[in-house]
Amino acid sequence: MLDHLSSTTQWIIFGVIVVILLGVDLFAHRKDKVQSMKVSVLWTLFWISLALLFNLFVLYEDGKEPALDYLTAYLLEKSLSIDNIFVFILIFGYFNILPSHQHRVLFWGILGALALRAVFIFLGAEILHQFEWVMFIFGAFLLYSGASMIFKKNKDEEFDPDKNFMVKLAKRFFKVSNQQDVPHFFVKEDGQTKMTSLFLCLLCIEVSDLIFAVDSVPAVLSVSQDIFIVYTSNIFAILGLRSLYFVLNGVMSSFYYLKYALAGILSFIGLKMVLNEFCKMSDMNLQISNVASLLVIVTFLTVAIVASVWRTKRQRKA
Image 1: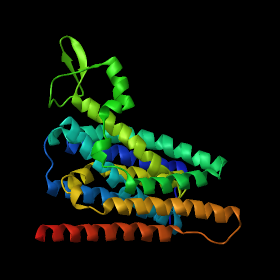
Image 2 (image 1 turned 90 degrees about the vertical axis):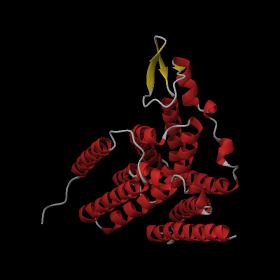
Image 3 (image 1 turned 180 degrees about the horizontal axis):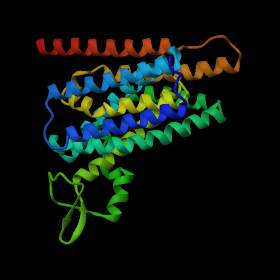
């Protein structure tokens, strides 16, 4: 049997895979057109299959425990990203972006997310390595996020691009074009380079992912502090975000109980971080395992989806 690959080689393999996948995705969607539900579902299954294949690679190279960590982190990131998709729907609706142009925005938004996640994950892991007590702060923040997700106001009332600091900054350097529904981020108008609504939408998408990372990265670091496991699971979850958006767009309102499941998952992960760190510092032999985390995530999502479908059917009958 061949020797296991070195850590550097694993990173190189992962990097090559991501570049190839981005190229495939860009080539497959090089034309601006509306993506059908069937195509979106097939692409979603394609990205999920690739993530699971990479999980087998981790299993072969590093063993069962890292493979379990990867799977748990991937499902955690995937489930939490659903809340971000809801925000994407609001942003596209606010700027009246045509469905045929939405993939362009999501593609470039995900490129930015690849860099942002790297910064957040490497910085977060380094902080935890230097100051383990920060785990209590991360855990408390996730508990707060889970509670606020239940009690916060309707997101339609909260979204206001004019308050977005990136949008404010961009407007200092460029004027906004009056042209609508153009498939470009910048256009020439009256001898000036002006931003389009497509570019303003992209800025809002990037900022929303930045805010989303504040919740998701600490949560994933509770599963593992192995940078390779955390980053690869994050990226594979993000790569499938575009196709999942087109699958869920239009049916998100049917999943009434989904936000409660996501709030429960965040709260559980926050409790896990606080409890595990307290037991570790107190030399107590008590830890919430990643197997338990995986079961909790799957259970919360399954119950929320089944309950939402049942509620929708009852409303239709009524």
